[in-house]
Image 1 (cartoon, rainbow, N blue to C red):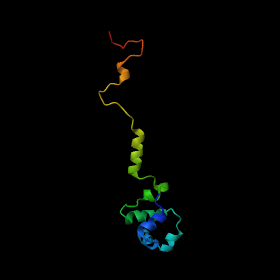
Image 2 (cartoon, rainbow, N blue to C red):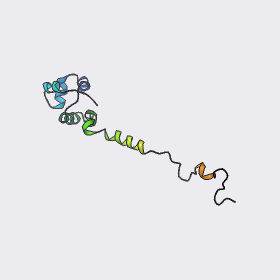
Image 3 (cartoon, one colour):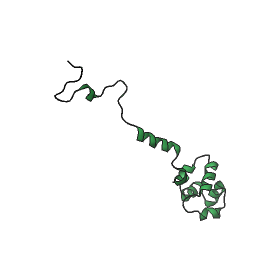
Image 4 (cartoon, one colour):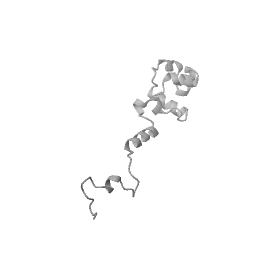
Length: 103
């Protein structure tokens, strides 16, 4: 989560952040570390997505879609043999047994 302090450092002052967020510098000083939801939307618009609502308020907007997709993809990824490849255990019968169709 990107905090108010990080944004003030990035923009140089609370007044500069206030201009970007569309509010007064007094309002910025009243924020806790989390950026208010309405201001997060304004900051995303003003920065052309450099600071997304997902980065500013993941508790409300969730993780960024590309991050979410990567996490879901990682969870679904299973090591599977290439098509046409045979697994070793299919080629060999358990000890003491013959493979079906083997003479």
